[in-house]
Length: 255
Image 1 (cartoon, rainbow, N blue to C red):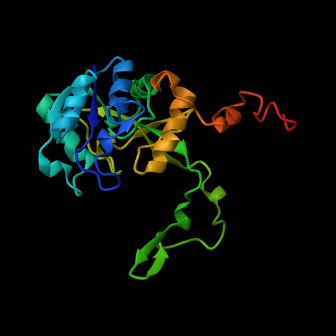
Image 2 (cartoon, helix red, strand yellow):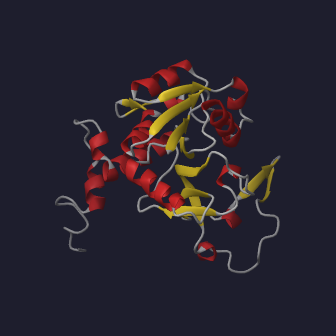
């Protein structure tokens, strides 16, 4: 048996009120709840906000109020999950953790992650995407009015993106684990020590900026057009990139 836990705290520093932001006719937090329901799972919205809990109920989720101390800037995902697992009696169940600000997830992705977990050779599963433009050797930390390399020891050779061939990043999709997990060494200890992955056919992201909403709109148009309003009119370049219409790449002389 599996239960989806959707985490959505009331406050957000990146975009105030982000999880309640209307996104193509629905609050942002509705999308992961819809995805869990599409996967055939019971969904529980975890939040410290009354409005967010009401949205969860509206879209078919049970709700559980998180203590305020778990939803501060220093609160962690695993502390909130631990609280919910104990309070809801999920220790013997499979848990699917979903981020409330991740509209780029669907039932098929959740089912793939569950199937990978059920294979039995891993302690947890998360969805990932290949590393693209952000190379860790190119990251800097600000120290006063100076910067210093994010990584303490930077190799003097092969400091290009190709050096990260095979690396992936967590892309905001489902994370699957047993409620009675044994903590592992990663920043997501509930995934245990042997973490499996699902490399998504489509990219995913969790929303932190208005620009992310534009990317998520593109994702919905590619993969979940039925979740967009009937009167949604995509920019012309959406069709061009997809090879649809007279101005598409395939229809041009470059085809």
